Length: 127
Image (tube, rainbow, N blue to C red):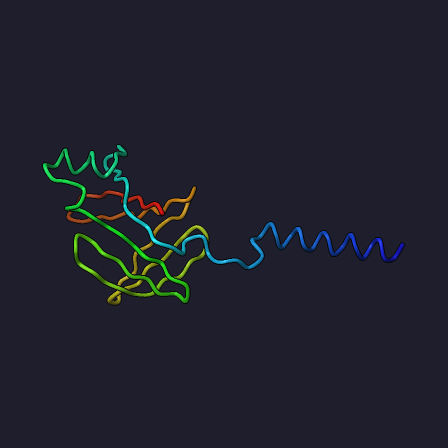
């Protein structure tokens, strides 16, 4: 009887760890590319947005590479930068040059809200 109870307890503990990801890597680690923009409550693909602005998607190429060990690098319209990151579900905080930007991780996407000059938009990234 005692062996049966011990086996059940071990099985339950293993299920708990499996449900928590078992200490696997953070879901935000990887290479991300901006695919959508949301502004004034309207979400469109990057291509559609840039066409409406008279440009093309490569003009606003935004990529992030979130690396293990708390480092990230990014490329925004040809300008490269790097910094550090922390993740506390659902927020990914990116810090570079003394400034921190927060992204929300939800449904496999990162959303970065930007406010500049009285305008605001959200950049949505996918792996």
